Image: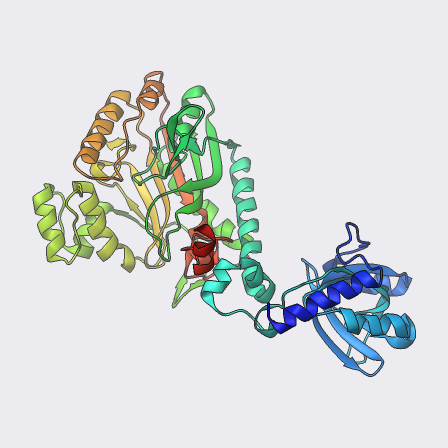
Amino acid sequence: MNDEAEIRVVKLEREKQLGIEPFPARVQRDLTVKSYLADFERLEKEGNEIALVGRVRTVRTHGGLTFAHIEDGTDKLQIVLRRDVVGADEYAKFHELVDIGDFVNVSGKTFVTRVGERSLDALSWTPISKALLPLPEKWHGLSDVETRYRQRYLDLIANPDIRNIFRVRSAVISEIRRFLDGHGFMEVETPNLQTIPGGANARPFVTHHNALDIDLYLRVAPELHLKRLIVGGFERVYEIGRCFRNEGIDYLHNPEFTSVEFYQAYASYEDHMALVEELIPLLAKAAGRDASALPYGEDTLNLVGPYPRIPFKDALKNGAGVDIDKIRDRSGLEKEARRLGVAVEEGDSVGTIMDSIFKKLVRPNVVQPTFIIDYPIELSPLAKKRQDDPRYVERFQLLLARGFELTNAFSELNDPLDQEARFRDQAAAREAGDEEAQRFDDDFVTALKHGMPPTAGLGMGIDRLIMLLTDSHSIKEVILFPTLRPSAVENDLGR
């Protein structure tokens, strides 16, 4: 412990010597700071004593007069302690015991200072939680990125803008629920632990269940279980929850992330494009942003629809010079990829190579919201084929902001025989070395054989959405506790 921390421990012991409970179970709190400030004029007129609580953020003293700011979870307020009001002993005790970062309970009356600051004129005070470590960087902010993510509690204390990101996140998720509930969708929950991970091309996390003596997987997506519910008779369902993918970490990817997926019977991907164009501006409003002029980095985005619709093959041909109507075999695509400087691994399938070229040369150039539609069947084992060209499927992604893939949606495949054949193709790709190819899910095929109506489904990453709406440029900024490499201290403790 450093010197300041040792001094704080001494003060803690002093509180106990004085008969003060340093961590009481109960406090008196009449109002939040935000409520107190909002109703200040009425409270001033009534003149009643009011009890507030909060963390001490600043203290300055002028003789027998002390000004301090306390902060609760709603706002910050100045309290004023006067020696001739609280008494010499209580006044001295405040300065003897209280440090920046401590929590206190203060009772007093409304008070406006000479410079017009609405405050609380303290009549009494009580310590309610002793901070044994000081706040970061002498309480002027926390800037070290590694510390900010690893000790998020310090980040939230020191950086009000970061706290606001998570208030926005909460408001946006609430708006998603209101929107879907208002459109007749029912919220459901499906398993996080699955015997077969499906619904997306991704490498899963695996664990072992001792009692059943079986391997289980953290879900990569809730898709296949949600579609089972459509088979079961629910026409509109959605789920907001965690997904897990054993993949690399970068500014857009975290192994644990939050998504919303919703499925609608008797609808197509065109219906869901219309829903997205309705939903996205509402989410911008919920975040306190202007949907028609949303700043993100150096760009200003117009989130108000309608959005352009560009077929995947056209985007790839115009952006990378690759015509997949003509070049569809693996060797030809690998040659094109290498010509363009796109890495190709030995086990990469045709679909993976197409996607790699697209992600490197096309997606970073899409600025304004754009629907990329009609993906190659090799990339979409769960989507319905286009009737006019079965090499492509009814799928769209909403791309924007030079690299954001915000949504992924299909007209869902409901032909069980076609689904069975595509699962076999995916299994062959896995055998050839594609670790992200989907596994054969026999029970899902059985479900489809009982009949699933025409259905549209959509998934949207919540974390990326919040990045967009808060002008954040790392997914770690919008996840309270992102996945990090263990620190040296954690490694030592784990030995």
